[in-house]
Image (cartoon, rainbow, N blue to C red; front, top):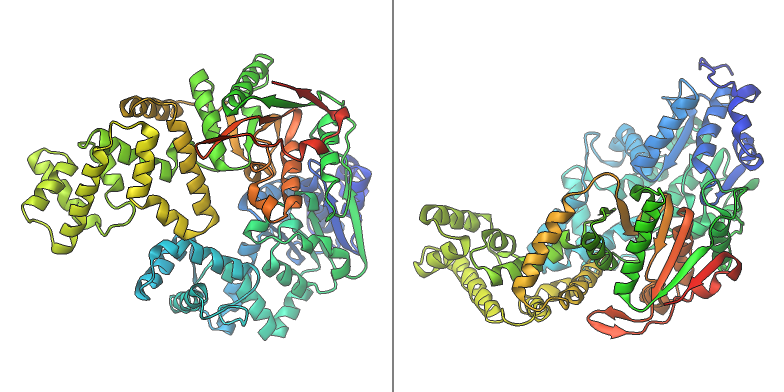
Length: 638
């Protein structure tokens, strides 16, 4: 077969292939087997994927349109496209995109065969939540369970479980809502992200001729981050190539850290059982990190039993040993991190090349406070800064209103938080009266209530809110931590979050408990109000050269010259829930991901004492610390 592509690098006679190491070369040129490329951290998996696609096209093994390449994020898909176009012309025809975008493309062509109009719309998570809340209201159920219901529906779809599947208990709240929700979005001629895969699976099952068409169309299928596939994605791939002909899956079982969102590490572990005529190529040569960092990471991950096995190595220098720092408490830990960051900057390490990695979002607060106090620039990646988070801003707004009832911005934020039936129409009337009389929104609402200007239903809610604010104001002389705790209890804010029973709600609860700890540092309400204004203002003044603070999950796929891995104590990392559920292997993989983000310097820290949920406790050092080999670490005591 001949192609009309322009040969940029002469792949057929060497060229770009000459830049590959032996294992990468083997992965690129192997086309006659179901191939699993076990790609360790920093071993060049994207280079292998793009070079393999170019190699297939350049040598006439397939036309671009006969190649399917799927990944998980739009960012990864864009990066692959950019690299591919640098390698070869004529690659536009490759079916390259996310699982969802590829399935949407297939569904657009055949949706009428399964009763969906081709002009269907794809709803996002916000639209999904609106529909679920609407349904809960119709069936007289509390809207506060909407997050848990949405999460359950998404998990069912990840597992390829439809609303009418026997595994869905239709007598349960989630099962009932799932059925109504699915009927509702069908009536809207809409699909959500989970449906994109489920409907294509349904299409393939009901129309074997269509399935056969795509099996014949795609001579080669390349899958990125295979360890992150869920059951629906796995089934879709197996249907397209049941025996594994033409399949190349690239992934790392040691970096499987997303079971909480439906990923199943078992998909990559049973690759050799799933497909015929298989081959595994291990990419173990690391091009990112220095020797001691890799040695520590490899030793740690070797303790996992559920893995296919590989050992990453480098030809680079050993570099600095991984520093393991013991601190007296959380404040001292933050102080150690910030002082070390300042020292690194003096040694010409840019702030943007430094990251602080936490296990959970609530941990960022102490580090943010310390960065602000020392005037060092930072940003929170993959999430909001601590004092910008919704739940923190809500409680702070209540505290501002206690301090100053004429604070109309605070009033507007929390008048209906938690929901108390005071909607936009009522708020608009408050604004109108406030403007007319030149008073605050709180004063306007109170005057309208006293004058009988409100509808009975609104009047009752506004009266209850004003009474609540006055009750809260009676506590304004208490210490800030006591005030905040009183707010959380009296408003029902914590009760609403506890009722949701979702991962997101639990994270918000942890943030609120961290706020209570932060408030212990302030003697009175005015001092805290002044502090919060200064902190938020200083956070707005930052440059691009900033230290990144993020969770370990958010750090996957990134790299930095220096990485700080903080809070390595049992109960924090590994997380207490993982210890209780005996799910330590995924936590260990998360530790491996964290260490291998570092190129030159890695620092691991833990505290002897830590204020957790407003109580001092002495946590045991993380059990992972004992799994780090002495030859690769340098211990620094208090």
